[in-house]
Length: 312
Image (cartoon, rainbow, N blue to C red; front, side, top):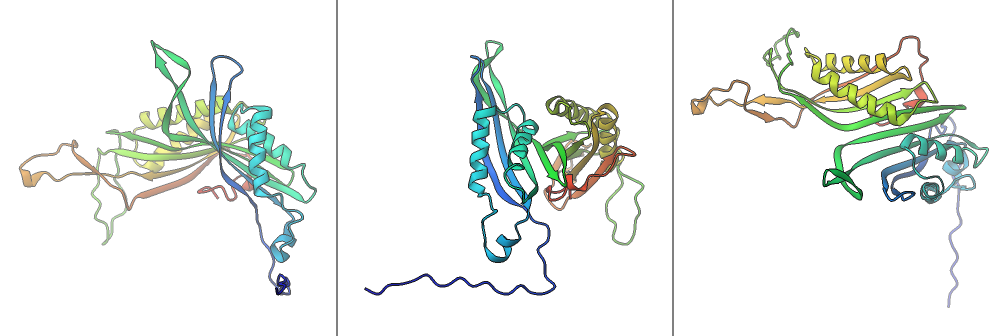
């Protein structure tokens, strides 16, 4: 029998003028369902959690030395262990516990990002009342949360995504520049629809994230409905202005709103009119609006948004 040996590991010499830039690593898509059974009326929490660590990982990237690499599997296991030990009071609170834990796991750790998506469930109604332990999934909207630790500071960002809204009138679009390539007709009555992604940054660390989420969602929907819109951009700013005006615990809100176009169907071949009643829902291409609405004088916090999908 011929003995075999593993090939020797070689490390290429470091190239001059090339350095490791900003980096983070971790475990994404950790599915966590927690049932609070402290009373006969159970409370269900359904999260998808991501844990990302930042620090001095130069040796890992350059030479494959994993001495400072907390395994992503360990990060996943910590999510489940903490759900058992501490419960899941709310996504921002739970992420804060994870941040506190991991930041104490090594002097080489300088920060991290912990994110969660909260999938909604509501009680099934039986005889006019919500059942103690039977639920139905809501949606498709999803609550989001992110806790970032960087340079000794903590940033908490709440949010919502996949919130689809539509108003069948009360929207216009006209007065835009026209040139040789403009074919879009002006309109004083159109469907306005979008799929809202919004994230808001807290400036008050003592704020109640659950109460803020409920209030911001309500303000977003109410303002979208009641604003007579001359553009989707105008509606976006009106929502941000209403949120910051009513919620002093927030520093800013950032939104992404694609325009979900609805095109009037030409029914003239069938000798039929169409008084803004029959539409085809367009898929793509689509207009896309992205903007931040900020409180004047509030310090910027770029670390809160770095690598936060769609909000960098």
